[in-house]
Image (cartoon, rainbow, N blue to C red):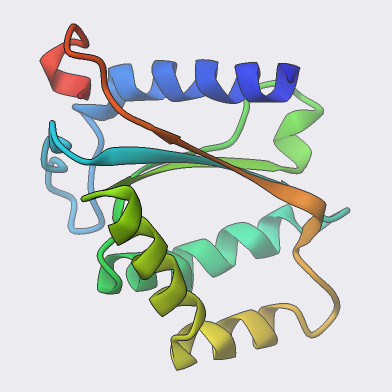
Length: 148
């Protein structure tokens, strides 16, 4: 449970800076939508595989998420020395939970994803067993506008 609290704390801290986040083109990222929902995902990388996991996200996954309707909000590595060796935390935005489920199904069946996953995992899985935690969240009405 403490890892979820740590992840949520990282999410809140990151969102406070989110308005300043730069997108891949170097321009300021659009403000997240006030409707829809966020998905906080925490990955625990397999021993020694965090760098490969980050490379797969940077070179393939981020673009494929967008292709399938998922909005990339921000990605983090914890500042805690131990967790920084094997933890990747990120936040996505979806139009709805049903849209998220469809996006994930389409993503998982995408030939480009299957190829990237197979190539990146030729020496074993990049994540630890049970190493992916997902939480869907909605902004409160009283949440500051810049992070809803």
